[in-house]
Length: 215
Length: 249
Image (cartoon, rainbow over all chains, first blue to last red; front, side, top):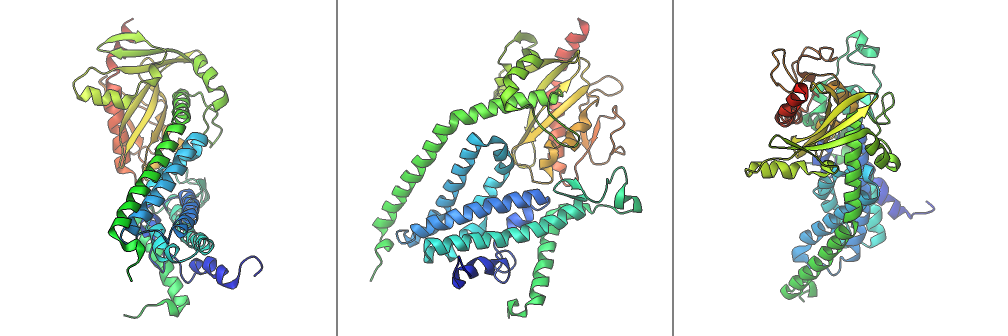
């Protein structure tokens, strides 16, 4: 594998498929519903989470042996909130335009259960390097689902991708719209995000029967 | 054996230490960056005001403000006069654009008289009156700047928001929404002030009818749209007496 040992590369690759945070661990569902009406928002959110989770996992892992177990959740929350706020302040001062795009996501990142989930499940029990890889892997897995959902919601809901009208102009009736095609406005509402996530879960589990839980 | 980190005394000490460290870190970051952030916000306001009156670097399909490097120059070039209207009295104030509309709204609620800033601009021989407005969207504040001519016909508009839903309400700051306002009337046919309604049911999605007091709404952003309608109506109405005096002169 070169750069990474087999065990380490598993940390990155597993969450992309068979241990996906959204479809298998059911973490980060709320933000997957909230910000996938547009592909661009989904991509920005994925990158933000990649950054915060990678860094947060390292911080938590470094202080894992001194965190009192009784208040560990509060400690985790404080770490992620402080990280996100500092990043937001620095962006506001030095990259104002970028911070305007990201400001909506700041609150969503802090309350994103994928972050707390990985702190609790992984960083508290593993070293910084492995925790870093776990953070990157899980946020990539999260991002993949977000981007898939965002892709379908924007395409079917608005007829655009990244704001570009790929299916023609719905008002002037060009392209597909000339043949009577209509955008499905329902795709823009959160319930459809849940249904799209449901379809991904269905496809994933029918391809890999081992993922189906027994009850 | 009990773990050292399970002790109550350790837990309390850790909590105190953590609060001190994180708190001072945040306070340090906030206060050391405060000046730069305030400066960025001031520049943004100037950019927004000029954007509303059509001074921007928009190209077909894209949207861009006047660049930071030349904004100070452009602002003094295009904005010829800034006035403050209070209780019907008009005074000139070259820093009227720094008036915080949110604070004015709060103090007006407490019974004080409100200061209304208005920015007068000249571009290509025509005069623009740009008014700042502010209201509530679905999650948080929405605000904007509306450029009008002396008859209160909208010449351009800029909207922004703090935290509307990405892809839905957040689209009020996109051109496809803002551009629709150009040319729209604020008065109805009988000459009374009506504002502009963000309408889900208008039969005019291409916005060819500029006298219907309606703009086509964004699908999935009903409450944000209602918030924009409400702030247009209630805020711009405050400026009507001033525009009447313009006509009489």
